[in-house]
Image (cartoon, rainbow, N blue to C red; front, side, top):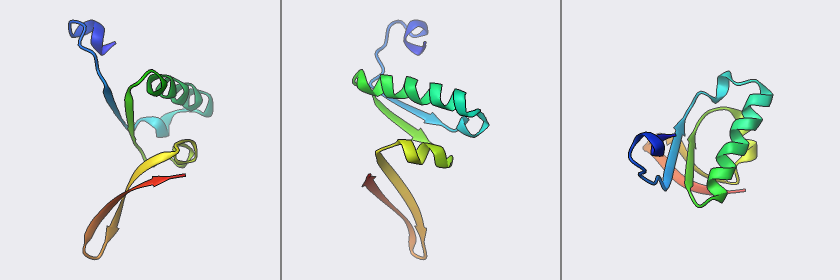
Length: 78
């Protein structure tokens, strides 16, 4: 959609920030399938969310954890 309104610019990376918590299970499944299809098409897809159902479906994650000395970031592959 963005490409059609921006003169055909190709987006290689897409970040989606929230909104998943308001979806019913069927809509969440549909959204995840669409994001997986984008990823299979060669795009990097990032999801920013606290929804537990998403954590179960995503194999590679960049997780940010708070510590007493500040935040710690690391990749986790499941």
